[in-house]
Image 1 (tube, rainbow, N blue to C red):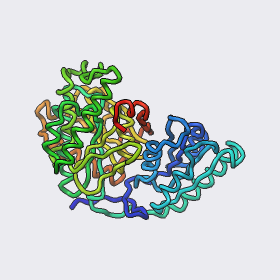
Image 2 (tube, rainbow, N blue to C red; image 1 turned 90 degrees about the vertical axis):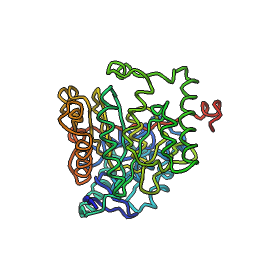
Image 3 (cartoon, helix red, strand yellow; image 1 turned 30 degrees about the vertical axis):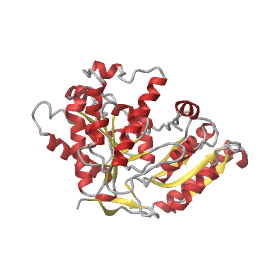
Image 4 (cartoon, rainbow, N blue to C red; image 1 turned 90 degrees about the horizontal axis):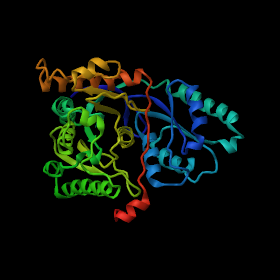
Length: 391
């Protein structure tokens, strides 16, 4: 079995990065949190932008980010008058056994004192965690998220199928894979349901796709809508785009649907392929899959994308040789060699798999090297969901 060198956490999970997370529960405390993180190498600050209410969907995703094994320690920086408090997040993070601290600006006496205290806490954590060494672990400890954005006609022909080959290889070695963007599964219900391990999973696949189509209809958005970039890139129908998009999930049976709402926030429970019922926008989709436990991301883009992530390395793959040449600073792998006949699908899939392993061992992706730390939490509208009868 393939091995990688990772960091074991107290709860038995294995990280491939050793980030210190500065978590602002609300955007009111994000600027001070960001200033604190900037003072300590390896620290990164994140927040959400939906206000200070105690919304469980936000809590699930913020806590999930902190619980990701790529995070070695957590500092929560709150304002002090919010309803979504640091204590709520502490209660969810502490059982993992990783170090977690909570400070509030109003209690500390302003931002300067908070800044000083926060930097001291991070420095202390960094010194303690410096003793952690990478150790060998079987590849079945790895969870991969696969994503596509800025798709063109080459995505479904080259990049996504090649990522699917890599996903199959990881699953064959006992790892887990997930992909989301429910609205980009439109028209593929029957295809995906046939791969479900049982009727319950098949029913859940139909449910999430049909529910998302109803949401789009209620918003006045045609479910057949595609972005300008997709159309300019040669895609002609939403079915064409969707059938190409789902190919990045490979060919293995679908073990389950991971729901992400107010009542539940699912994570893979065993090896295999999972669908995440998540938003149709690149950065929130990646954010939610990482919060669900993915340590590494493969992101395909025919038109080109620069997206990274705050705590997970993002490997960029394009099936368009022109995009790779134009955006070589951002794209990690050129899968366009499939289209020009110089390389087979399986060969490119093996290259992607090898880079997943190399990245797990510490190799930086181009987005990481550029310092891109994208992070957006998505929350649905309770009011809209009630009116649609979805909750």
